[in-house]
Structure formats: C-alpha cells, structure tokens
Image (cartoon, rainbow, N blue to C red; front, side, top):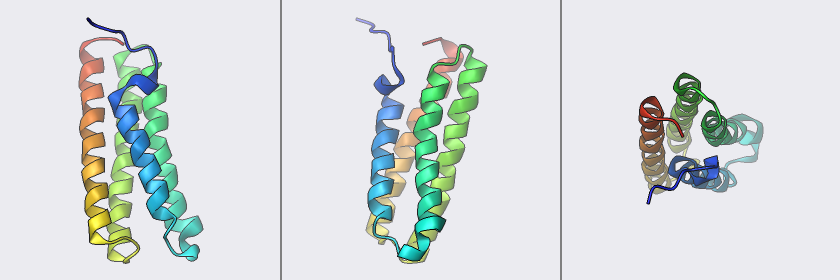
Length: 124
C-alpha cells in the first residue's frame, strides 16, 4: 500500500532532523554563558533552519523549487558540522558527544539527499 505523504512532519528527513535540533539545543545548554549570543545562537539557528527548509521545500510545487530549499537545509547542516568541530576543539563538548552529533548529522544528510533525489524523479 502506497500512502501519500501529506505533511512535512511525515517525512523521515524532517523527523530525524527535528530530533537533531533537539539534540543541538540540549548540548548547547552546557556551553559557557559567554557563548550564548555567539556559537550557541548560531548553532541553534542553523539547526532550526534545517527543519524549516525541509518544511518549506515540501510544499513547493516544482522539483526545482523543492530542491532549492532542500539544498539550503544541507548548507545549514554543513554549518552545524563546522560548528561542532569548533565546539569540540574548544572543549565545549566531549569527543563522545561530538561523535554522536557527527553520526546524527550524517544520517540527516543522507535523508535530505534522498529527498532531493526523490523530488527530482516524482512529485509528493
């Protein structure tokens, strides 16, 4: 049975990315207070941007429009991957947390790439 996806919240990419956003919020709670308006703010905004762009892309009509937003979500993900390296190198997160976040981000990246491939071959 082929059930049509009717909302962005049904997309596996959005679900996994949403859990990643919550993870980013959780780990940044432990950052030094002086980073609240620096790295913490940037990481949280980039994380939210991932899910926001997946949501916006879902409702676009053409595959070109959809992919524009899906690629934007990938660029936000790359931004977070860079910020996670900085956070690890500044000892704001442990290497264990970094590895968990890196694994998470790669899973999200693969799912977004799947959305891009899917939207190029069919419409939702």
